[in-house]
Image (tube, rainbow, N blue to C red; front, side, top):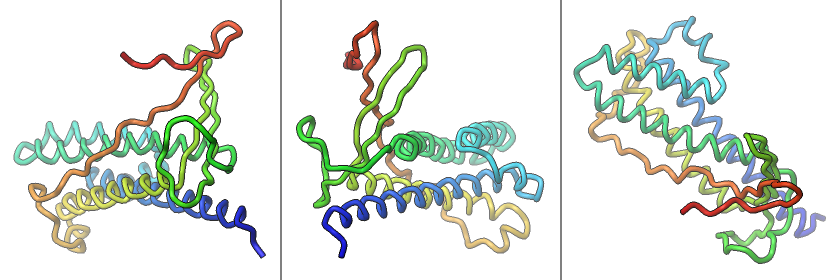
Length: 217
């Protein structure tokens, strides 16, 4: 018989797994958009398939820049939508990478500190990381299941938005266009609202002291 502890840990693990799968789906939507912008073909597909998320962002930025230069009619509106998708992909990538690479354990929500929205399950992902980018920084914070659910909702919007844009460009590509459903008009396509960029709780090592990151003015 499982204990309440096992049930709460399992609840967090299932939510975390669903969040990772949701991100993979959103990343695929971005790859498919890049493939359509690149006019498809086996060569393009082979080059795009194994792009990491940073290379994928760079490729999308480059292609949309070329697309804007070469296509006059409607290119500004198209560029605005694609750049908005790129912005969302970049922001959510920061959350995904932090969650995937920094969770080192699962435990009870720490007592004290700022109030964070949770559900009935108080178990959280305990995140610990070290950064060495000019200064040595230590990061200690946690992520709740409620935050993971919000992440899933956001990347779900990212996937839907990316698929809608991909369909617009797929309809211009020969046979692929003939097999695709009619695209939604860009003028009627609503831009999702992305969250703020991820904020990390850093403490910097200065001499022999560990100092918290100064608050922005």
